[in-house]
Length: 189
Image (cartoon, rainbow, N blue to C red; front, side):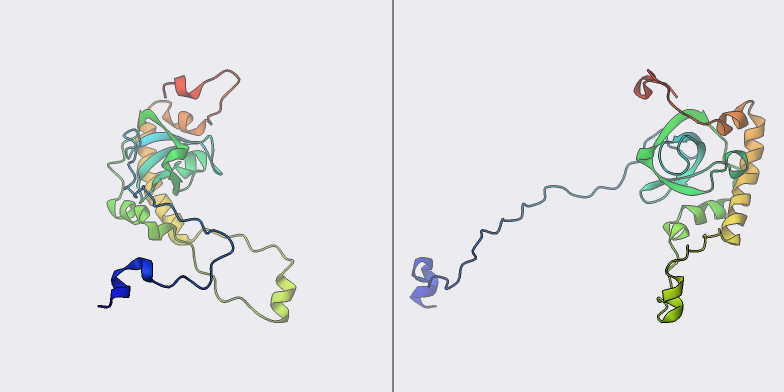
C-alpha cells in the first residue's frame, strides 16, 4: 500500500464536475407490511361498496385476496358479480349472511389472484387491416362461461341463506346514498 492511497488529501482532484448539484436520494424509512383487513370485513359480512361501477350497492364478502376483499351481490339480487374491491372502498355493516354451505373448491378458486388476471393480448396486427380497425370501437368483453358457472355455484347457496332472513333480500337490493346533513362517520351500520 502506497502513501497516496492511505492519505485521502493527497489524491488527485476530479477533472470534471457536474454543472448542477445532483440531489442525494433520501433513504426510505418505510417498509412494506402485509395488509391487515378490518375485523368487520369477515367472510359473510354485508358491506357497502363506495367506489367503482357498483358504488352504493350492498354486497356479501366471500373472502380476501392479497390486498382486496372479494365480494358478490349475489348477482341475481342486485347485479354485483364476483369481484375484487379494495378494502378502503368498502364499509362493513353488522349484518351477516351464513356462507358455510358454499362450495369450498369454488371459493378457493375465486380468492386466488390468478382468477382475476387479465388475458394477455396477442401481438398487434400490422398492415392495412390494423390501420382500418383503428377508428372502430373495440369489441365488448364478454364474461366467460367458467365465470358464469362459478357465479351460479356461489349464488345458489347464498340465495337460500338470504331467503331464510326476513327483509335481507330487499336490504341487499336497496342502494346506499347520503343526503344533505348525513354524516357517515357518525352512523352505525
